[in-house]
Image (tube, rainbow, N blue to C red; front, side, top):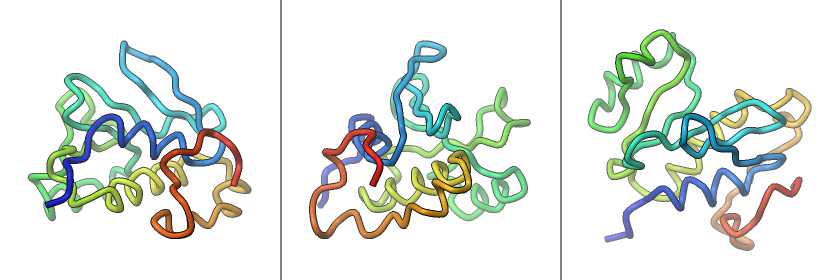
Length: 132
């Protein structure tokens, strides 16, 4: 069985995406691309929050309620939380973070970054905020 996904994996993957920086907001680590927040690890680090269009969020939560949820105070936002323990693997975490990153990144950056396959040709999880 693969190792559980944790907060360190969120940080490593988020920072591997181009022009990403980590900031502390609300006493939580948050991750920005070009100055726009795309992920955070709130509360007790058992989940993480990412951008999700509100019209897609209800369907996502209905399809996988053990994985995705929204706390009441975020109900009117365009964010969703994912439980780290419910993720299948690092690939799923990468896909979720990349989707949120693309929603926040400037269009030219998002369009030019292919994302590729992070699991071949090197380790994408050891990189920093360098452009790819």
